[in-house]
Length: 296
Image 1 (tube, rainbow, N blue to C red):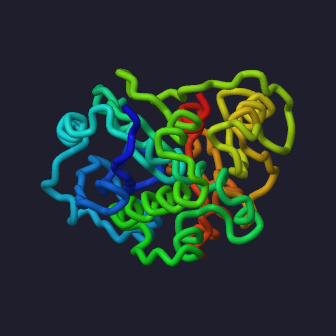
Image 2 (cartoon, one colour):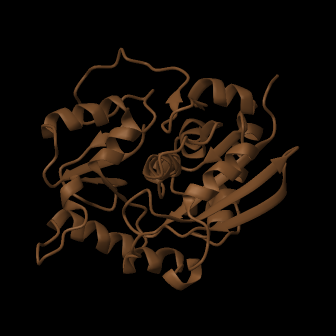
C-alpha cells in the first residue's frame, strides 16, 4: 500500500554528542495537513554546552526529572512502526541511532525520508541563494516557525515535503522509494538503494549520495587517513573543502578532539565554525564516528 501520511521528526541535543538528545518534536501529517503535534523533553544524562543552550534555549533544569531516551525510545517505537518519518538532514536520523546505541536498544522501526534531499532534488537554485537550510527554505516559502524548537522544525520540514510533492507531482511513496531509508532492527537505518558505482575522488560529490549538496571539512586527528575520509564523503555526495567558510555545512572532528579539556585548545577550524554558528550559519559539528554512521 502506498504511503500517504507521515510524521515529521526533529531533535535537539545538549551538546555536540549526537546521543545527547534533550528534546524530540513529532508532528503528524494526515491528508496533507497537520493533524497533531507533540514535544518530548528528555534528560540526556549529559552536560549542556553553552553553545547548544544558545541555539535551542533548553537548560538542565528544564529536563530535570524528565525520562531518558532509554524510556522514550521503546514508547515511541510502538507508535512509529513502519511509519514514514520526515526529517531535515541526516543529523536527526543519526542522533536517534546514536541514542539507541547509547542505551543498547533498537532504533526506530520506521521509514526515513530526508526533506533536505527532497528539496535539493526539487529546487536547484537554493545552492547559490541561501542554501537548503530549514530557515532559508521556510522563509522563501512563507512558512512561519520558531527555529530550533523541535516540533516547529519538524512541522516546517513536513510542510517543505508537501510543497515539493505539489510542485513535482511526485508522490510521497515515490520519494521514499527513490531516496528513503528503510526500517531495520538494528540502530542504524540503511538506504533502500545503495549505489556503489561512483568511485571518483573529486571536490564535487556523488549526486546520488545521501549527503549530496553538503560541503564538508575535516579537522583533528581521525582514525583513518584524511584522503580516505574525503573519498567516503565524496561517494556519499559531499563537496570536500579545505577550510571552514560560510558555505561549509558539516565540520567533522576527530572523536578524541570534540570535547577537549585539561587546557587543550580546539582547532582553529572548530573555533571558526562555532563563531559562524553563533552568527546563524547552518553548520553542524560532528564527530568522526557520527560521520561514519551517516555515510555508512
